[in-house]
Length: 452
Image (tube, rainbow, N blue to C red; front, top):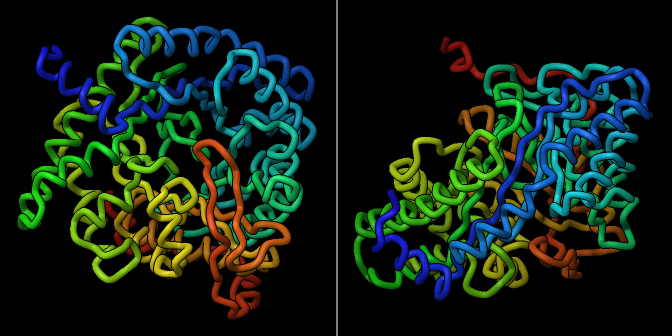
């Protein structure tokens, strides 16, 4: 039960500290839509999404109105299209992407994810069809998001897939050059991708999930920062305890919304993802939490340690508030989506190398980073390989969402609007990576992958 005290506490967090539910995401299984004919599989996908998610936005608005809890986005994730489109090939995959886009607009959601491939051990026919068509699928269909998993702790890193994704990211950005490379902002490359992630661009509905499920992603950097303002100068033990208590309260709100949406939609409740997801708005920044701990600015010495404490304390507090915590859960560090990160990057304090170090202890990885438009595909592939190695060796999810901004150079600005925000173009190490990436093959799994 939710107590009266929790209700008043929640209202204060919403009104004064920018607490919101970042997303209600409905996961939908599409395996029954498989067909060899491109138009037929597209028709089936469209019909199934509209049937299952037809009331999603309406129910979200009802919960917002009744409980006074802002729900920023309503989203859909589907079975990886590399499986659904395997029988119909490239034509089928593109037809599905367009059908996904039409269905998302019909039901009124903000994004739809799942134009995805899981190719951490090899590249099958469906995987290849998705990879080849990603640039086109993320161009005109503006609601569609894509993800590719290139490595796992149990399988190692598929370097052929890594090499391909460097080229795909560059091509995707170039196709959307009139929008600062926006297409690449809807594409993420994972290691150890999770099946129940409600956040875009990496959401897809995995094999272990129910036929349909409701996953909720909460947010609340502003709430955590306000809590830490009450313990200025206190030891880190007290900082950690304060974050844990705050994460508990935030997660309870997500649990309430998730169960209520599940009941009204008559769809199983999946998980609450208790990630601290920032926005470009002032006062809603993970970077500000880190500076509240005593850092002069994010990116300086001590940043990785502060982020590690934050990420761990958020998880410890959140798991006590819900029996079904999942997704990515922790702290996100997307540069263009966090006002404090943007400022630090503009000042040159937050660099790509420092961000890579931070990804060893955060929830995802190199996220929403703009780089010069002439960055070679091999360099982007090498950055993906580095990030995947952090995830594979440490048994955690890591990812790269990087935008080679067409026509832009270091110090220029890109703007994507909305939650995707804006960011300065950051410097990339110019050392050539072609010979390394050209080897291909697979980097073997680490020895601890043999635990069974």
